[in-house]
Image 1: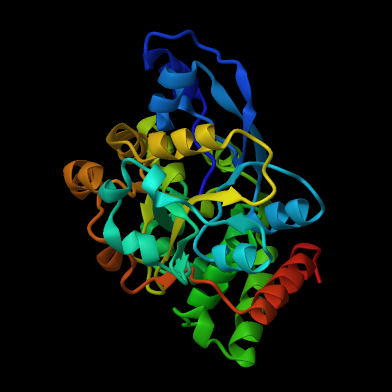
Image 2: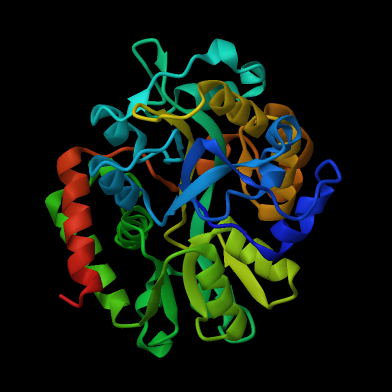
Length: 350
């Protein structure tokens, strides 16, 4: 998932409760998050109650976040996705969530609550909030539609210097596995891993840059510096809304990847626990869901928001949305460490 548009966000701040365009940071609540999720339109209830936004610190992918926390960084809430939750929990970083303190817990789509280690041994570890895809995104005026049919276009020499992938091991290997015919990375063999890695090495020959956040890849695609990217819902949705000739092809021969993310309570947080639950409740509000779907192109966990706004944005159930995709499920520790090490070698040109 996951860096959001800032221009609209800053302009929209004034829509919340008639407040001004800037907010003080609340030192009693620290959020460790993807850049952009500090947009107060995602948690208007919190702003209305406390008159300020939490303090934010940002990461570009979950492995970076994991290593920073393991080195001693402290925050109160974090925002991992489906493939990382188990690793964070097994490392002892998470505190169980008291769902009795979530007034909107019953509004959460029920199947989201127990997905991929979100609930184990009677403990809820994640408050699910956002879900979406990673797919081929391209400049329609600079790339022929025929060249977007297959993910193998990322490795086509004709796109040398015009391709960008996320600087994110999970999304990168989702692409690699899909390209070699694997849609469940937990069933991949060592040979499959090598094939996926070999494909990513071919793509590396075409790379303009590995993008760190949505703002960076949107800028690169808007200028035409990058014409083909592997990116999240927001990139195509926002660029199209700004009038740029950009489209997402979710229906390539090899498919797309899907994921679900949420907030967790970090075990070593030193902040105000009441404010942490106020923040989680605010995120579960229907207003948050409406804003996320209509402005950013992502799905939300609020069932009422999705019933009203999801179908028009191409969302059905999570099952139908993720069918035939590479779902970013947790992988074994050994497999993940292999992906991390190999991706670093690939990016370095080895």
